[in-house]
Amino acid sequence: MNLTDALLNALQSGLGGLASYLAAHVLLCLLPAFFIAGALAALLPKEAITRYLGREAPKWISYPASALGGFLLAVCSCTIMPLFASIYKKGAGIGPAVTFLFVGPAVNILAISFTGVQIGMDIALARIVLSLVFGILIGLLMAWIFRKDDAEHAKAAAESQVFAAKATIPARTVVFFLLLLGTLIAGTLQIGLLRDVFFSVKIPGGWALSLQSRLDKLVPPNPALGIEGISVHGLLLIGMLVLIALAAIKGFKDIFKGFTGWTILTLGLIALTLVIASFAVSLTGSGLVLGINGRFVAEILFMAAIWWMGATAFNSEERQEWLWETWRFVKQIIPLLLVGVFAASIARTLIPAAWIQSIAGRNTLWANLAGVLFGVFMYFPTLVEVPVAQTFLSLGMHRGPLLAYLLADPELSLQSILITNSVIGKKKTAVYVSFVTVFSTLSGLIFGWFISS
Amino acid sequence: MEIKILGGGCPKCERLEALAREVAGELGIDARFTKVKEMSKIMAYDVMTTPALVVDEKVMSSGRIPAQEEVRAWLAEANK
Image 1 (tube, each protein chain N blue to C red):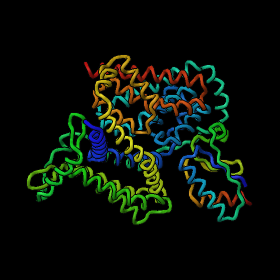
Image 2 (cartoon, rainbow over the protein chains, first blue to last red):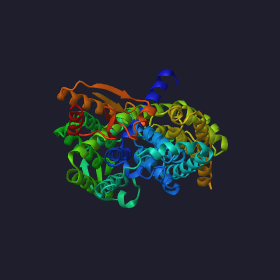
Image 3 (cartoon, each protein chain N blue to C red):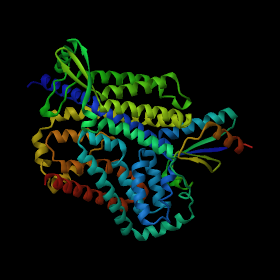
């Protein structure tokens, strides 16, 4: 193979990876997940959880509350550090603070749903359960080791009223979250009720087949490498995404000044895209067949309910705040994610599978440690760890070390270690980092045994 | 008048600063703006969520972007 062929091959692989990310199953997961993350940041009163993180809260409340707080409040990096520092210095102390810090990056709604759809539900569930268990365990260990220092903080905390504020989560917010979550679950759950086609519509014409063969030439599908290629359905969805992006620039940028026609248009396009993504499309010689399935019906019902509730149960400030936060997440994450996916897909053709298999092909202690260390030294922006993990998986990495990597990567980048250091000091940071390394390695090892047996 | 924006430079902090500057301009208040980014200094104000708005060393809001009318009322009150 000469250089031009190699370049072309790499480019096609990158495009193929991008296209399959933008195709139906990822859209149905990521679009709702961004809106949920936005709603968590905008609509959830933080005091409803922080009231359980004060100095006087008993351990059996403050640790689970910290873990829950990590899941619900830590969707934004601008809340993680101030909250972490507050819990440490003025609230429940080093233990719950560490639990919060550990759980936050690993168990947020975006990371979990994305992992579930791209890598598998087993890894996503393991990521949730092991993060919660080890988050609390590491917190308890840190609190025990540094119990003397913690007593000194108790004095500073006693004077502080920071955690005294109370709030409850209004019922309408809970219902709204459940509806948003319903859209996410209805779009991604792989069960017969949602997948089975009970009614189909034919769009006649030979154009579909010739378009598909052209797309196959542009991005050849390669099942061996896990490259799906682009379908006609996928092309339509990519087109819709471009339209959404264009409308959103006008509709969401100045959202806090009020809703405009562009805002409504953007929201309408997003809803339409989810509807298009939810039906099953198959290709025959005489045209396209659109399969109407349970997913299609469920998505329409959930989105109608969200639209109605969003319009009636919340005031315009809350709506604006919600969309602004959502748009902020999209702007912050999507460009990096697209670049990350493209690069990870190219890397898939360049890295020899034999390397990965010899380092992490089997579930050993060293393989898991290698997964963790790779996570520490390679800093990938939020969510990019998922396509990277998928690349490893297709190259033959065992699922145990893969989980170890997925746990360690968001926890232990050099950047986050430095920030943690500035709040709790060198000694505590060193202990924390060692604990995370050991526990992530063990998690991968245990999970690897569990699925192999 | 001294207005401080507490927060590590996230987009919310910038929006809060823009809002405060706009209102101060409307009211014709000669305000000095300071951004406080170090976590230890932020902690000294007893807030746990950023961005926070501090007017003459008094914390007016934290963890949210207040409505424009709220900011206007606070600044007008502090300017008396």
